[in-house]
Image (cartoon, rainbow, N blue to C red; front, side):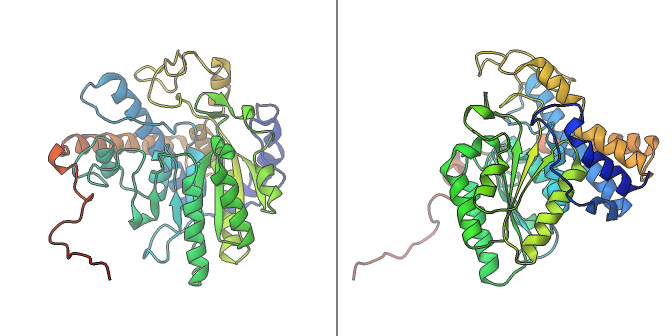
Length: 386
């Protein structure tokens, strides 16, 4: 089957891909840009998904089994296709005044890896190492790497959207064709920043893309408890912003929607909104309910004081795993065979192990460094009132 044929069938069958209601579907036809990608680019997309997945699984196992491991994490496993598909449509290499920018959430690892952040330095940062990506000051929720256009994670729910529209305004003001992208979860719908960012982006026709990863739960509450819409994308349409709903488990559907949005933004067509229906395999924070060597968290979460989601629901989503979908598609398209795919995964696991090993050897931050970059250093000239 041709790539175009495969994608047409996948789009038409999106609503019946093993789920019902609003859990996973593609909204109408969203273009078939993925068919035009080179084999190398397609393989890179699968490799990115695998790098995110095995980084996540290794972190979870460390948290469960290694008392010396200091990092804390909000895991991204299950959502890998969203970050990968979006960032594959962006300009990630080149001078800072030419690359596209990404603003993240406090679940940032997938976005960071997909944008090109160095995994070993990021892991050292998570473990509070002085040679980490941000010298041990950021930990998980504040990591950033401007060199690749990853402006930062966000420990709050929502402000990143407003800052991202500011970047988009700067691009337009200086005549750049750069694009500003912000990732947000379904919980952001209930924040004022969500609506402020969308309203301003539309009023000013900014090169701004809002990617909402609807994993059904903001922390421990189902998104329907605070959102009256089956699709949060309806809220974007209310501001006159073109919006797409895609199956966030399928990296090629995500890429298609992102490519369309990026092309619109670069051409001066203004903002776009992408809602990716997806699911996180671990609980909101950390690894409660998980077991070493196993993917996902199925047990009791003491932070939620309950098992807040049905095990059957999680297992249903895992039947449409982003890794499996991307791998099977590329094999079907003849981009790779089973042996090549297995070799790629083995190589990725070795890369992840090496990154964690390097991070563990780095020096820890020291207490006396705690006030660095807080106060001005050296002699500061006095300021006089006129």
